Each structure stands twice: as structure tokens, then as C-alpha cells.
Image (cartoon, rainbow, N blue to C red; front, top):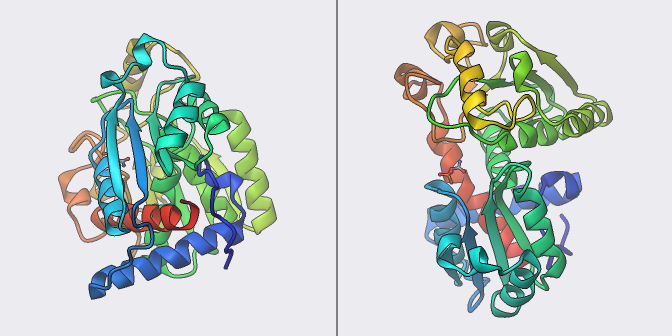
Length: 324
Ligand code: CP
């Protein structure tokens, strides 16, 4: 267990060692156990987390706000549109100034080509930890919750096959931060990681190369497929979700048009039957029901989406308690 994490940013899990991530998981399981037993764990009394949102959220906002209060602190929800950011406050100013008011700064900024750099610029100017609540590259807290859920459901993740797959959605061109973060973290835990997507939906090549290197070091495997059905075959964990083809076109309308070629990429009962009989279905949510996944699958016995959403609370509390 690592005990020197005070002050650390969490922008991507790739910048934390495996020992440090194991520590987050240990603490998350302990905090989950304590909450189930009704044991108070107010280790961040009087501490305040800024929660700066440039984008909508159901789970992230609610779980960070509930989490910091359960740790004895307070969460200040800040909608960026109600600030002076649009009138000129820079990332450096936000880091400098919020770093003096708050004990941690959590940010969701998913704009393509903007979000990750914005969070890094705030972090460079901040004297307190900066937590990435999702950017255009990474969604670290989602993926930590996913790993916690896999360990709860399946035990030791080494040797398990996870299919991280594109699926069609009509609602909007979703960031690619979830699949990128999944291939980066799951390869470090010795899993056999399958990335399945149509040719236009490739992920940022630097992260694909990192995932290959992670798999080599952890003695797992990493492969890329372009056949939706093949991705499900004999998988232990299936994680099919939509993302936009931002590397093919920066035009969101054109991305939506390209996506329409893949309306058949829906997770249904026939596809689930291609995976192992005890395979679990995962999705970070929100999902386009009956477009991205059928009600039968997402509400069915193999779905773990609600445990996955709950675990956001526990991993975020662990990182806040360790870093703030
Ligand atoms: N999974 C997730 O980040 O959900 P929200 O967008 O609702 O926060």
C-alpha cells in the first residue's frame, strides 16, 4: 500500500503506478465496506472540493458531491457557464485562484482537442490536486470503478478477456475517453484486451501504442478487431459503447452520418450468447436504449451497470481521501 499520495493529481491512471492504483482499490473496498456498515469516515472534515463542469453529468456530479460530503467535506458545484471563463478567465487563473480557495479542483471538460490540455493547464497552476472528471482523452474515475466492479464480479482480473467495443448510438458523438482509458488500465492488470471498432472509429494512436506496451509488460494481450460479433466471442466481460469518429472527421455532423453505417452494432441477446455463459455486460451510462443495447441485455441478469455506477462513489472517495 502506498501512503504518499497527498497532493497528487489524477488526470489519467497511466500516470499512477500499479501499486498506487492497487492502493486506491484497497481504500475503495474499505470505504464501501464502512458505508455498508454505517461507519462514519469523515477524514476530509472542513475540506472543500471545487467541481467545475463544462458538460452535463448525472453520475459524476452526484457521486463526487455525495462522496466529499460522506468524507466530512463539502462539494462546490460550479457550472462553467455561470462563471467569467467565457469572459476571459484563463486556465492558469482558475488553477491559481481556485487552488487558494479549495482543497481540490475536479473538472469535466470534454471538448475535442481542448479538454485534456485545459485540465493540465489548471493543474500546472494549482497548489491543490486536480481530478479529471472526464476530458476528451481520459475518464479515469469511470475506469477505476469499472476495474473495481470486475474484481468484485470476477476476482483476479489476470487472464480475463474484455471486449472494449464500439456500438452505435444516435444521441450524440460521445467522447472516446472511456475506451482509451479502458485499454490503458485493463492491459496493466494482465487482462486480454480486445478493442473492436469499425475502421473510422480508431482511437488516438499514442494510447493504442501505450496499451500494447502495457500488455507486454503485464503479460496480458492486446488485439484490435473490426468485426462486432467476433469481439463478443468467448469474452468474460463485454463493454460495447458508442464514441465519435473524431480522428476521421472533426465535423460532428459528418461523424454522425458515418456512424449511421453501423446501426447494426447493437448489443442484443444473440451477441451476448456469443460471449462466455457467465460473461458480464458493462456500460458507463448513459446508454441509448434499444439503439446501443437492448433493454433485455442492459436490464438482464448479465448486466452489472448499477454496481458499476455505484462504484464511482467508492473509487472517487478513495482518491479524494488519499490526495486531498
Ligand atoms: N458515466 C458517467 O460519467 O456518467 P455522467 O456523464 O452522467 O457523469
